[in-house]
Image 1 (cartoon, each protein chain N blue to C red):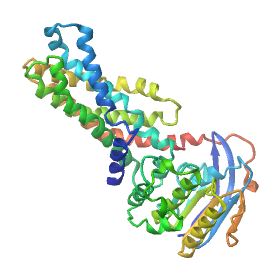
Image 2 (image 1 turned 90 degrees about the vertical axis):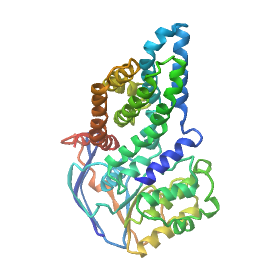
Image 3 (image 1 turned 60 degrees about the horizontal axis):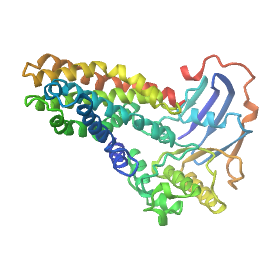
Length: 204
Length: 218
């Protein structure tokens, strides 16, 4: 699935944030978004994921192809690790969670309540959710927050595996993942000139 | 959809899930009324249908802010919005889960509490019928209110203020069915209107809730 973004303009809180954003994400490719805090990485990713409308431009190839992982993991603390993953698998019409448990080293935690996991373990569970969705395009917002070095390794291996199967990934991150094959897009060049957006995105 | 319903029901019965809170509240409110009114059985019999309806309505209100706020806080709603489920389906399932965990127990408990209020013998059937027909509307309207107020810190009070006026028609016709039933009068007209309110709310409000939710997620 080719994800194409052309001349995208996005705004947040009634102010234009980015304009003229364009990139193409081919199957098997990864794109890393960089830029200082507040440049609009999260807003761009949420727009690509379809959670907020763009104030201009066009996104194609994003219908029912996106698996989004934001700042929060969407875990229920009173459900076990297995129950959480099973739930997301069945929401996406799938049933096999074994590969995801293995990829993020969650087998030993499978019957623990998500509420009893550490922050890093929760994040691993949140990322394992991506694998059970079966969606081709992963949209990841700061995926490595609170992960230790070994877990970052697991994550990078999971992303490589996903790319190897013809999937693609777009991620915003501040650390060096060691994902050499990924293209890097610096968002600061797309920074919108300081002005109010034509319309508040809340009312689009 | 089925997975979402199963998960919501499972969460409701786990620790902190709030299952039974509404029921306990209903019990306490209806027990308090005879204390407040005093030992006047004739008066209690007269007000019993209305008291049961108000108690059920308040018990329903109590658990509304759990419908969507918890899922919003932990990011589940964002992820559900990108899932292949339609948003209208998500809010409908949420309302259904709320009805099963709150409304249905109220319907089943109402006749027992009717005894405490000296409900007329003819009224027991109609309090069950009126609550069974009316509480789905309470859940669906409440889900709409919950969708409006997610994202507001401590939006529970605002939620109550928004939702209570919307509950008025359901309360009027629901209590009327129960009262006329208890007095041995015909209940046809108010029961039809109550059913109409419920069906209309179930059919239309999920679209409004979904639209509001999409805006609130931005």
